[in-house]
Image (cartoon, rainbow, N blue to C red):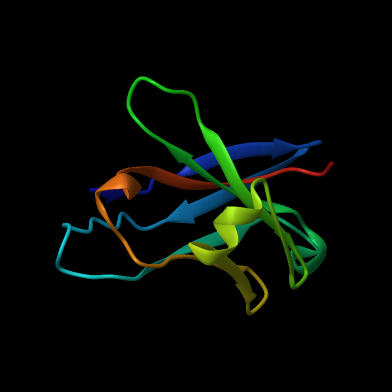
Length: 115
């Protein structure tokens, strides 16, 4: 199963809220899924860094990618065939997983901060 959850972060004095709807995919039922990360409180969303992470039980979170404007940077170049990200509107970032299989099990979530 793939799961997502809410994340709360502070950026200076302003509170930033990132919301994700829970998405659960059972193997064999779907090969691609997308998850929206809806941001509140980020004044210049298009230039903000939005990070996508995966966490599996008994391991720490692993960053997969981050996006700023329309440029996606991957922590491992092999991820570019599996994962993608796109900023839509003024506050929505979509994270997509392709060719879902049992190795993709985990919790996926978005995060925000400046470098």
